[in-house]
Each structure stands twice: as C-alpha cells, then as structure tokens.
Length: 327
Image (cartoon, rainbow, N blue to C red):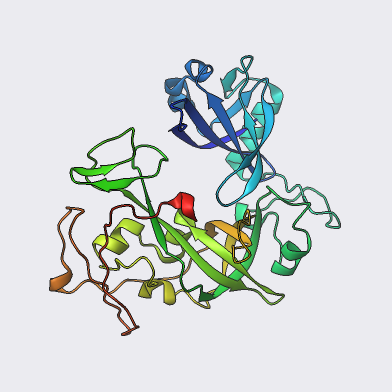
C-alpha cells in the first residue's frame, strides 16, 4: 500500500501490455508495482482519477521480483492472477496513511544498520539522508533502496552522451527512417522523445563518486527541458556538454539517488532520479538567428557555446543513433 506517484503504460518486446505504478510509502521509500495484461482490466483508471488526493492504492496478492534495469538492480512488485486494486480503501491503515500524506508527517524508517531508527516528521528531501562515504560503505546491503544525499557536481565525464532518444509513445528504442522515426510498433513519428542522461562526478565533504543524472533530476537541476535545450537553445551535439550544465558545477543540492547497476568498470555508481531544493537560476543563452530551427527533425543543428568551449558540428539526427538501452 502506498501513495500513487505516477502510472506508466508499456509494451514488452513480445507485445505484452503492462502498467507500471510508482508508489511511495510513509517511510518515503518508492517501489514499482507492475500490472500485467491479465490484471489490467481490474485497474479502474477513472476511479483513480476521481478519487480524492492523495490517492492511496492497496494491492493484494503481489509477488516480489528483481528488476535488472539499465541503471539499477532493484526489487519490484508484480501482479498475479489473484491481484486486486483498491483506491483510498476505508480501512484504518489506509486512512492513517492518507492522513500522514495530507499533513506531511510521514515516518522515517532508516534502512542502513547503525543508524538510529525512530519516528521523525521530515520533508521528503530530509529523509534517508546519507553522505557519499556512507553510500560507498554500504553498497551491498542497500541495493534497490532510495536515499537522499547533499552534494555538488565537480566535473562532467567526457566521452559520454548527455541525452538519448526514445519513442514518445512507449519505452522502446527508436530509429530514424525516410518517413520519420519508428520504434517498430509506432511508425512515421515526427520526432523522438529527448531525455537527459548526464554522467558527472559528485562530491560532498566526505568523498567523491560518479553519478548519472536522468531526465527529471537534470530538469530539476537547471530548469530546462531536454527538448528545449536541443531545439530551442541549439545544443545539439550529444557528446559536448551544454553550457547551462557547466553553470551548475559547485552548487550544493539534495539529490535522490539509487545504486546503479554496474555494467562496466567505468559505469556510474549512483543514479540520480530527482533534485530537491533547487535554488539555481540558470538561463541558457538563446540561439543566434542562424540557429533558429523548425520542428522538422531532419534539420541540422550547430552547437554554439556561450563560453567558446571547444566544439564540433554534428548532425543531430542520424540513422541508427544509439538509444538509452546502450547506456
């Protein structure tokens, strides 16, 4: 049981439909519940939309699985044929949970051994706080859990792309064709969905480590959508870090992090999914008149840095451009 944060429909490579539901419990921890197609008719979307906020959902007969994703390996819940879903049920535990979310008095349930475990009334960004040295020390026992860390970016990792493209209608890889973009299931799309994946070194007063800032976290950091960064501000080169990101270096913020699934020796240790308490006021330098573009996705965009950083012109859209699954 937990508060519904988001619902994300999807399709597997074999064409099987599913719905992923992101939940937050009163400890501040998040977990995904995946409903498979045999259970989807029981998910009453209209009832969810009509329910009073905050919407707390209760699920029955779920099974625990380990999701081996691109950036992390974590526990998740999956539906079974016996699964049923209830929105804002009138049982005491659900009523208490909703009341806690209403007045912001969720519990802090400390996950790492050695930390004091007691009830505290904290904001989301103040729960499960860890230093980088603590995160480095307790990697094994904390896999799959979410923590908050106050740190700052010290540098960006060269040679890594800062954004990727995906299908705007499903989570599949997308490629460019003569008629538009295609993921296999959806054809002739006018443009892909642009998503941040910025790899950086972060540090606090205890230690440094590497982290990848994904889309929501990067938008929270610089307040510029990835699509706007590329099409409006003209930062098209996937391997040249945009100037607004350099302006964020050294700014201390609270980051919501998880351990990344290391696929190579140079992989990031942490995935940053959200940035809290953003006080930055960063505005990208508007593109020059020669950089103005139309929505057509087959136009070439030139990279222009506000600080005359070394850059090279590249074509934004290329057939077979690497997708998120490659990172």
